[in-house]
Length: 182
Image (cartoon, rainbow, N blue to C red; front, side, top):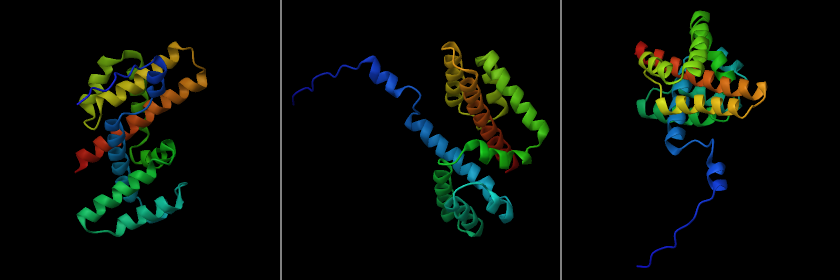
């Protein structure tokens, strides 16, 4: 069998991949979204209907409430997770975070500041406290923030990067709390 000629990669090839999530990160994001969908489905029907999201997502959440079979429910939440990917995480989390309370929200804001300032030492502490954390994903969010800051990004761009970290931290806290409740 003949060998294929070796393909040479350029810096442009690597820059095109920069910022894209790996397949593992994508799968974990789907799992996180499915778990958030479970929490959304636990909201009262009236609150679900008030969500500012796509109508298909609202229908899927309402359907999930009526499903009793474990396997059917699991598949339904995977579907909900897929639909959630098209929605704004900040809006979804704003409906779920009141369950945590203002004290917990302030604590998570402080965690984000610590993670940005202290890096790996704060990351280790956060992981110990929140078992649903994926070290790699959170570290990538933090590194992207520092990269943007190093490239002298605008305040608005830095705020967007910080919001991504906060969204991830909120998701992890919700999922960790859910795991403790079970």
